[in-house]
Length: 169
Image 1: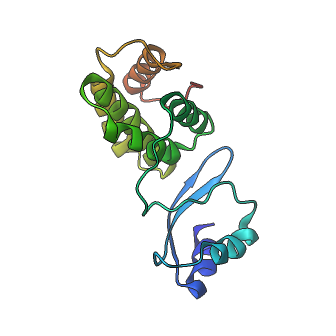
Image 2: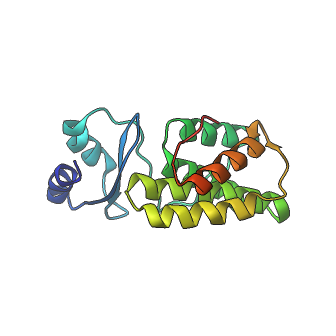
């Protein structure tokens, strides 16, 4: 799939890398010139299937209302779109401080760990899950509808058993 994306991107001066597979989508990163017409890429990639998301990552993150941001991150998590979880929460993380910032960093690290799982980079995944759990220690059990205690307990068991299972959040 990544080879196909690369073949489609090359004639319009793009570069596709970092393939990730989720239950609902095939994701990859596309690098192109800032002035590139994203419509050309959207048209070219129709050959791969329906477009789910296309967003520029070279622009500053947009921070929307807190609850809306957390809900969107949870939806992406449940769809196994962990790179998107990372991207959505990062804008919020940049604006927070203290324990809340640490909690958000824990969620971002957990999502990043699961991106590594999607890329079959398992040793890195275990290290990042451990780092995420450190940041989720001593956090409130709930964060705007996200059950942090359940997530923390689940991934502590995953780390102990070395058997990856992804919960619904």
